[in-house]
Every structure is written in structure tokens, then in C-alpha cells.
Length: 316
View 1 (cartoon, rainbow, N blue to C red):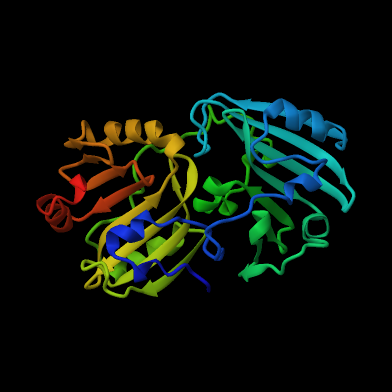
View 2: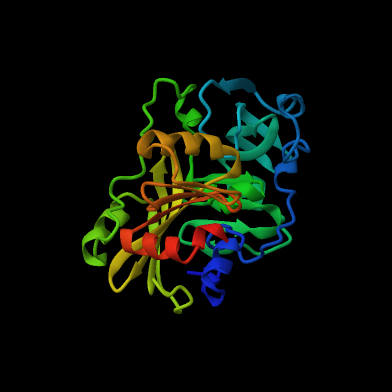
């Protein structure tokens, strides 16, 4: 596996680094131009603009607005364009769904004939991991075994959203009747031993990776990264860190645009925060924190939380 080595930095610097998909090595991606094989559709353009372009090459098209947004990049307005029989100069895609966050195209997922349409005549060789091929300069990821392709913007890549599959492919056209657990994942038992919790981490993830840490974090020597852990109705990347065989810190990657939804969920579960400043909102007697400058949730054992409190970690 190829993973960005964030542990060569100090612990705080590590958390300030860009999070990108696990096998993408270039932090400064050049976005485009896989998506513009679809009649010159561009990431960042408005819903109406994409609708007009894609209608010209689709056998059917439908715009769906989501009343209760949960897509992480959305603040208030989530919409999707569902297209079938999408014709391109490289071949026809069976189905494509374009996802819009507050009227900007941020993500698309395509099914059927994806390798021919997106990988053909690429100027770069893909970086591969498991079933995934990533074309870095194109912000393009293809799962050949499932015949699915994703194109997404920088924020979506930072959240590893290639692990998500749009429920609209299964004709789930609104989330209002789908229950959401607003609580943090219960299987993340802080203080549990590696031996006892590892099966739960694997069972609640799409896949995981493990690595020894280099000692830059004095509280942790081992990490399991979990991809596809459900939180607030969406699959997340979770970094579970262990010190002396004990789970003592967990980072859950989030997006800035969903900060208020997460804040309300944490308040519902833990009550008012014990600390609020520019970078942090801390809950549950310092054991749970919402980071705001680099969007994440941090879970700590009581011992580490007390250490962070006394060392003014949350005031930096």
C-alpha cells in the first residue's frame, strides 16, 4: 500500500497536513479533465449549466433535490442529476449521477463502460491499490471490478469519497425516511485494547490499513485507518491510534461545510461544550472535540484528554 507518510512531522503538524485519498501522492492536484469528456462538463459549474450540457448526450435525465442534506460538502442545498445512456466520443456510459453542493458540481459517479470512457487515451499511468486505479491529474478514480468511476473535487478527495456509492443508483430519492444515528459510532470504545477492538474496526469498515508510528505522537505507536465507517448517515475515514496497546485517540475526517450539522449532533449527544474558541469546540469533559480549522472530530481517553487540557493543546 502507498500511504502519505504524515508521521515524519510533529503530531500537530500531522493534523495540519492535507488529507487526500490513500493512494494519491500529489498534494497539489490539477483538477480536470476527466469530467469534460461528458460534453465539456466542468467541476464547480452550476446545476443548470451541467443539466443543459448533459441533456444533449443522455437518453434520460432527472434532477433530484434532497430535502435533508447529508452529503458532507453541502451547507444547505444538495441536488443530483441522474442520467442514463450517456453518449461520449469514447463510448456510452450506462448511468451517471452528478452531485451538487450549494449549486456547484463537486462529484460525479458513473456506472457501466467506465474504463473505456474515462481511462482510454489518458496521458498518465494510474496509481493502483486493491481494485482502484487513480489518475491523479484527472481527479479520477476507477474501480474496474465494479465498473464504477468517480470524479471529484479536492475536498471530496480529502475525505476519500470514492468509498461512497450514491444511493440514487438504487432509486432512494430522499433521505427523509432513512434513519440517521446522530451519535458517534458506539464500537469506538476508547481505552479498549487493540486485540479486543480490532475485529470491530474491521467489521464496521469497508477496508482498513495498519501501520506502526514513528514516535512523533508521544501517546501513540500504532494506527489503524478505517475507510467507510458510518457517521451521520455517511461513510467516513477514521484514524484509530493506539498507545501501549490501548485505543487512546480517534480522528474522524469531516468537511467544513457540514460543521453546523456535526455541532448540533455533538450538542445533542453531550450537551453544551466546555470550551469554544477559533479552532476547537470541546465536549464531554474534554473527551470529544470538534476541530474547525482542519475539519475533524477528535475522541480521547480520559487520561489523554486531561493531558491535552493541562498542556493547553486546545488553545493552540
